[in-house]
Length: 190
Image 1 (cartoon, rainbow, N blue to C red):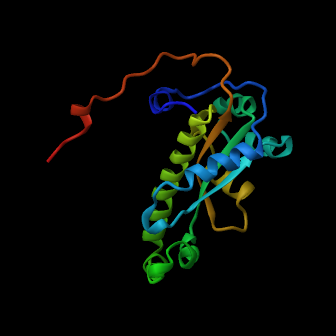
Image 2 (cartoon, rainbow, N blue to C red; image 1 turned 90 degrees about the vertical axis):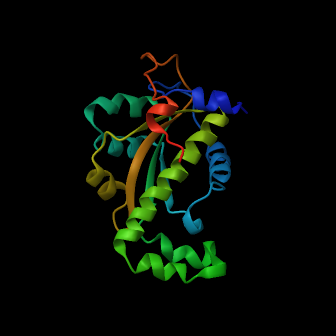
């Protein structure tokens, strides 16, 4: 396990070693990440781990041309999605107050907003846990949302949030570290 400074200092990975990531490791990472908090424990994240060549070929057709080689390099590409009907599982996930299900199901806008926000949190928890276990991550949003939804989530309530290449880093990041905003540029204490 890596220390927290290393986990956050790690950078986006663009090229991966030709080394598989096991199902056991993906499950271990998920089991760590699922403990992160979400609104009313709604847990809307749904993930497809694309590994086999046939599924990868389908994914190449959905990503921007500049991202194809990155996806090809990765042993796993996670499609982080959200369940638009996540509230159907509220009786299991929030049993002490199942009336919250009605709150989410009564407004598509509230449900989608909640699903998108909380799946983003859960995917970030997953990437932090993956980095903690020694894997590198390459999150990206350069893809055709409709193509991914129809290819991987047809006949479901799932919608893609973003995709992330996962594996073992091959070499250093080819780009210099870009600037980050200082605390005073983006934070305010009131």
